[in-house]
Figure (cartoon, rainbow, N blue to C red):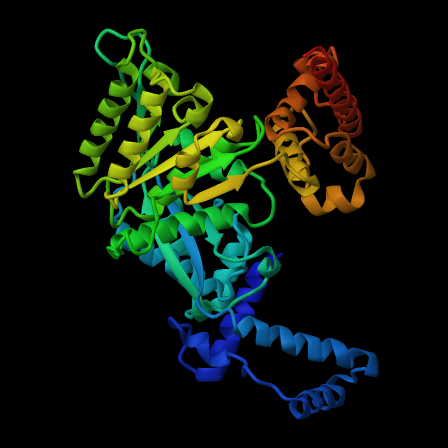
Length: 503
């Protein structure tokens, strides 16, 4: 049997062919666009026409009108941006321009893209694909060839839409989408470390982006609605302002981000994932993006007054990296309160801590003149951060413990991973099924309220460890596992309460 998606694609292609007689050429389906303005008279005519042809009941009139208005709303979303990230295989010899062309052709032949962040399936050819190609005949006779090319050269293809949650699931025509295709290779090298003289602890780690270690960070995060999109839009705007040489004295922007909130909520992961994503999407402008992770604790010298000098020296090296116009530098300062401690708390004495803060602020002011640099920072205790640093941060975003939907997504991804390796039965769980058809799963989500993302990711391991069974005993029953997870979550919360009481 042919899949629904492919039947829809075939229908779209045939409709285009019937309308213009030109086959399925790029942009050919633009002729199928609906009018933006439909008055009441046209709506009535539409209802009557449908009643004549299909015996539509009076109760269906509202549905027809609503559907018509949906089409109108759809038309307002013309040129919605869709970033398509294409990860090449290590042995691929294809030119990036050719890969971009084939990916665009793939979406064009499918006809109507759906607004949803998702990985494109590039499975091996199946019988239904042969049927699909046969039914399309000469019109799409090379569709299988396009798929074969992508399979041979691409490790992964993922779509990311610049759209709010209310637009998810909408279908757009090919000509209504602004496709931005980013072809990249993953850097397999690990982090390079920089040490000061004979120091045992590295002052920073340097990664060449995009790297394998950060590849799944962005997609693994489930945050409150819109936070990832807002952060990505800010970062993109800051980069565009820099490229346009906007005078920062007249329109202030420092390209500094501060993510704050309780431990374990994904702040550091979010910074690394954001850097990876931006690096992929800016490769045409900056071919050598770099990620520098500063070890704040290593910058406090055992020698009085030396820490401020170490901070200055480190940022001078970062500025040297920005001298290369092909390089974009992302700087991560985790637990920034270590370097930007509130100076009023230290008194009037010019302590080493004050010198560190002064050095950091000076270097940030110097770095903002570089359009190819961005500073990403995190903090668990914002009360301890100097006001002058907070003022320099363009974005101050709170990242709290996940809400119900986010906890459900986190748990579901962990459960499906256990299913992948055979610890649980192989049948994959879907979010709709678990939320609306599994009361036990709902109970688990409720039981985990107040837990951080990090604690949620640990639950499956702790649950299985506490079940006192061997992995060779075979898959664990889903219901048995979910009950055990619920009990483990309640135990974890009780232990945290005891620890809080003892402190």
